[in-house]
Amino acid sequence: MIAQVKDAKRRTRFANACRGLPVLDALLPLDCTLFRKSQPWRFYAGPTLALELSGSTAWLAGHANPAELAGFLSFCGCESAILDGTVCPPPDGWHKAEALTVFGLPQAGPLPLPAVDEALWTQLSLCREAPAARVAAALYPADPTRQADFYSELCTKRSRGRAVAWTLEQGSTVVCTVGAYALCNGQAYMACGQTAEPLRGKGIGGRLIVEMANSLAAEGLRPVFLCAPERVRFYTRLGFAKQAEYARYVPEKC
Image (cartoon, rainbow, N blue to C red; front, side, top):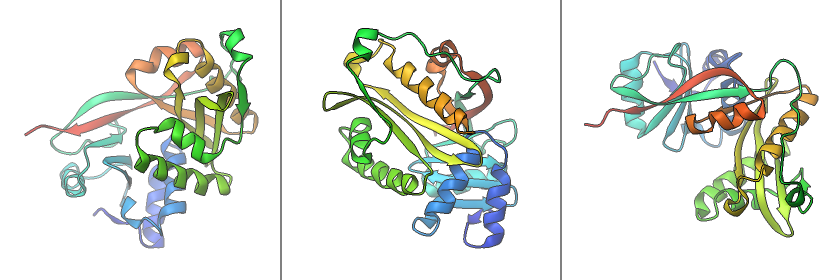
């Protein structure tokens, strides 16, 4: 039975379902530890399942009965679910919308820095402790609600040493950012890499991502991130290696 994580037994089940999984063993246990008391509606466990609700998306580790899972996600109003389809049978009536590749550093070690528009690069300043409000505004300039939610979570995680956010700035403007938003269980889950549209294609985003990944690895962490199909070639070209594959599932249309 899928139930809210309210006691030690369910917390143990939640942690066990995530253990050792790239991305999921960083993101889900950290969120559960930090936000379970203030946002209890986000976290659920079954005998072999960990489930976190993030907006209209469910993140799942482990597995559950497909019929029960479909009913639960429908009740919660979920529009998509991210899971490992080889381990967790998808909810009944849901289909695979896209593959999500987990990338990380190759075993050979740090990556060489990729080529960049050097003239532009010299105009930019790197901030390794970017103010949370500036990062949130750069990522969600037209969505104050998402800005506020992102700002709150980043502040909570960073105050505990569980997240880092870097920016490249041109004068007083953030033109590129990337972060590691779950430092947990030996992993560093990287996400939210974004470059201002006028400066895309000049290599600054790729350079920033590689620099952060190398820096995290030098600290003894394992950098990992999820990649949509259209970005696989980009990250492969940077030298990252495939670690695993998950998928995003959506309900069949009636």
